[in-house]
Length: 171
Image: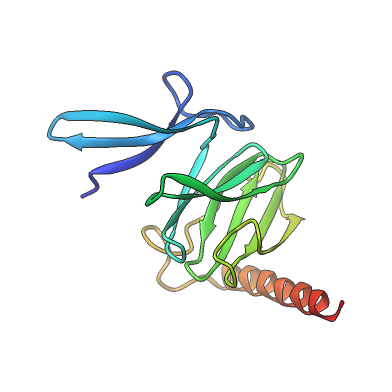
């Protein structure tokens, strides 16, 4: 059972979509008591994702996707994409992250070489109007056998990353 949980608050509720400021912290449970500890101010967290590749927490909201290291309580890397409203992300546990935006865009981040989301390659593509959530790719809630459409989407994204990396290496 978890004894701490990452939370984000703006007043009495979580950060609404599109906002890029809030307070991020942890809640420690002890019996029927709970204690909130503020770790970071000015960080919005509409969505939280655990990344088993880095053992970090991916925080996203508004135009920002941030990588939070819970051992140092710091943001170690960040990606900002103007015009987006990042809602939910999913990590595959192998250095790849996919985030859905309410604008209909999907971003794919490849950071397997550096373990930092801000230094890897990424691509943004329109997927579907009002795209909101994305299913977990690893850990609790992930399918043990991916459906064919998910495999095709993942393969297309990885192929795109490979081509982008190959083009970058030629220049």
